[in-house]
Image (cartoon, rainbow, N blue to C red; front, side, top):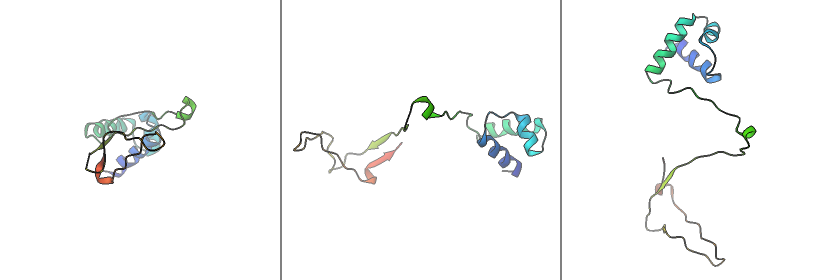
Length: 102
């Protein structure tokens, strides 16, 4: 990857909604050069998508996380929930070899 392409990607990481003209000015190249560079990087798969990162706290979210786990049932982990002495379900424990993050 060329130095200007790295600089261009760095500028996009700062603010992906900036115009090609603004980025061209910062990098000292022409606007058509930036447009061609953007199109080539998208075609080559170096840029997958342009997205937003909302301010989740202002939307009322304190923590937002999403994980998809696959747990393999090996001898020590029981699929059925067992109740402990206090009537609450017991926690199942799995080793790192039992869990795959998808």
